[in-house]
Figure (cartoon, rainbow, N blue to C red):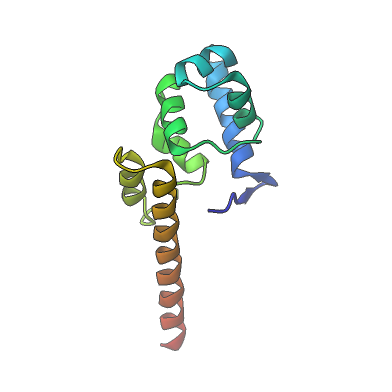
Length: 130
């Protein structure tokens, strides 16, 4: 999946900014949040600075520690589309499935996104032919 761009910032950078804001609002230090999430300080710092893209599993743990919606983080990370009618429940079901590895989850999400894009392209072509 592409990182995308919003106002010159990549999705990963805006995710990091958002996480930093939420962490500070929760009055947690980087070290405290890293301990609660089960990741290292340097790794969490890299996420906040937009240098690393966390897995859905890490995002879920961060959301739990910050007491915010995991879906909100998935949207910010570009994993789930914020547009109504575009995926959503399928992506969330894949991300919540504990029987899949992170790599398998990402592969399924990539295939699903490609099907959505293909279908949207075909619908656009059908509309042009009418």
